[in-house]
Picture (cartoon, rainbow, N blue to C red):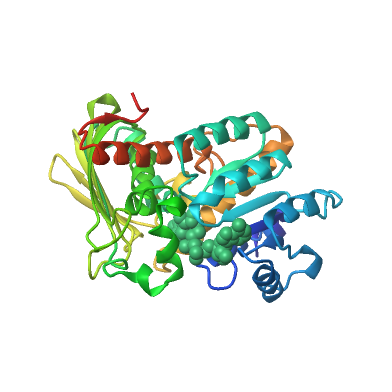
Length: 394
Ligand SMILES: NC(=O)c1ccc[n+]([C@@H]2O[C@H](COP(=O)([O-])OP(=O)(O)OC[C@H]3O[C@@H](n4cnc5c(N)ncnc54)[C@H](O)[C@@H]3O)[C@@H](O)[C@H]2O)c1
């Protein structure tokens, strides 16, 4: 039985911008939102062309009057509908350069926002959006979906409760191989806009997957980047953005980190790996084996924690199935939707989300800003061969 049925709470109506025919991540969002029955898709502006947008909405079984030609029409159209019928939230799954105006428009029209990463294209836009989101009193979630894994939330809890001592060194690797060739020249949709700096937000791999790495690092450790030194490379001839990066980071509390990000590693699929080394222990987690978290102690003890076993309430709240019944990418994504639904309900009730609750763990606009600052700092460091640069641009 779905949680909605169990709790009697009606699903929150939402609209989607992007995610039309041939798109990648929109369908993942829709599946994740369906998982707990807490969200209902009612409208959308799904594509960059009105015809395709309407055709995409029809394929999804939506009422024709709610399949809009553009996102601007969607915002005014939905706003004009009676409360209870209209969408309350908008999910933004378009190429990066469009996020800012769509998100700003959503807030101005009173919609909660769930926006994919990287939040926007420039630091200035990100700062303006943070301000607008905080002033609005609306929920603003950024889908850093890897934070939704139960064993990542367990890792965060272990760090925060001192189980591995103060963090000294963190390695985050995010390696893919799908851009090892000039896929954009062949017109591949996802490669084309990602390799166009005007659409990607300037960064290539650092924006596309480096922002996930940066977010995972700060989510699990609670530390923030103070400065960094980045080497960015474009291995594929003619490519206008980086497809490979090695970044050294100085973190708060004296910790150090290294992020390596690459999309030209033949044979790698979605290999996001996290290693956190503290004074008395270490943690190891891999996205392609997300159910396991390895914990090493100074004593030599080595434990493999498995999702679904009893790891306390935080991990349990992100778990649907018993151990031995694998959960993965969609469920982790669904945990962000679960948290965002709880955040919307808490806002309506005027009650703050409890610390470490699913609602409190959903990344927000400020996390999005940090991702954009990270990309900006990487570009500044590499472009001028400047070496170490601070995150805030000073
Ligand atoms: N969280 C994740 O793991 C993850 C994974 C992939 C992509 N993303 C992010 O999601 C976003 C979309 O990426 P994708 O790979 O799905 O891209 P995509 O190219 O597959 O899909 C983009 C969709 O947006 C539509 N679109 C473009 N401009 C539009 C507009 N003005 N109005 C309405 N629709 C418009 C396109 O027609 C297409 O349907 C990007 O910001 C990307 O960084 C996140």
